[in-house]
Amino acid sequence: MSLIKSSLARKYVMALSGLFLVIFLILHVTINLASVFSPEFFNEASHFMGYNPLVQFLMQPILIAGVIVHFVMGFVLEIQNRKARDVGYVKYNGAANAPWASRNMIYSGLVVLAFLALHFYDFWVHEMTYKYIEANPQDPTRYYAETVEKFAPVWRTVLYAVSFVLLGLHLWHGFASSFQSMGVNNKYTAGFKKFAKIFAVVVPLAFAFIAVYHHLNPITH
Amino acid sequence: MKLYLKIWRQKDAKSKGAMVDYTLDGVEEDMSFLEMLDILNEDLIAKGEEPVEFDHDCREGICGTCSLMINGRPHGPDSLITACQLHMRSFNDGDEIVIEPWRAKAFPVIKDLITDRSAFDRIQQAGGYISVNTSGRPVDANAIPIEKEHADDSFNAATCIGCGACVAACKNASAMLFTSAKVSQFALLPQGQVEAAERVQNMVRQMDLEGFGNCTNTGACEVECPKGISLENIARMNREYLSATLKG
Image (cartoon, rainbow over all chains, first blue to last red):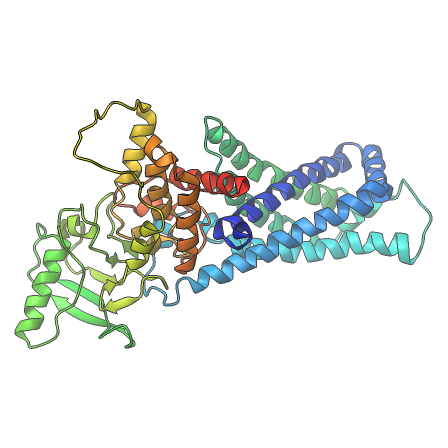
């Protein structure tokens, strides 16, 4: 019981749900990259993810729960943290002792959350409608064309790219910070943290590249 | 040099405070920051005004009493020193200096720049000790071998003077650096390991009860700590707490 109430437990929840979402990002970016290099593999992988019952009815709800736990706990912590300083400073030089990304996780997180709403509307709602409301037959070849078409408008490509920059900033602090929250401190910690920083740059860049690539390379019939 | 000071003035804990402007001339660069405030107070007393109340004791950086937020940074612009070790050579003629008390719900202002930091005492009382019977019989200090690395880390954690700069610097007013230093100093030594699980749980519980914020690993506390207490202590406390709680 003491674990549920404690400030440290809330940090463990943030760290573990964040690490879980990082693992999901690896899977997501790998499949998305296939849309650039092998549309056939992209179609196959997307079809598998869209129709495999284990993915649809077990992994997908766990993923959604992971996202909800992460942002709800983020808001809870933010509210508590604001309460902990009831009278603010007239002059507070936060930039002198901590990087921007670490001080603004709530804002980078809010942008990512707003992006997720758009992203869910673009792809998830579309999938649910296609499969369960319109009850269309399975078509394992549709995914590549649908994805490329999504990035035809400039506004969506720009919104996605900007959101990925904020995702990068969120990961820049969050991924490395999760090791600290879980109390990891051994001879591998420096290596973990370096890997986390590289991840925070490479993965969002890859996502942004995919969006821009499809915008610049529309399907011509 | 001539300085333009903006100082938080608050009559007592219940009153609403405000920033008040003062102009102070004749400040020498060899003066310490607290000596500069002494000069200001002499002027105020001569004018029949109430002097600015601020905490100070040893004035040599070891007691942890002085506690000033200077231009938005705890203990001012320099690293690894307390406000009493800060000298006016760190400022220039004509500078504006904003001086505020530590800001945290758990450190309420008593008067002007003085805050009540007894929350730290209560965290310490919750577990920052070892229960051993002592006697007049001297025991060989080296009777229990301790790894050099552990002895060093424990000593470094023990250099925390409990000034509260970590809380003041943290955007969340978190007391994790202080609490973790006190946990670590004992957790690393065999004498402290007997009560280790109970200690970390009790100290964290008290820290939460006092109303400090959560740690978001920004590292501001480590940068502003006058004793250079490392963030590694927080990782150690997180680990100790997790293991203590899971073991029940």
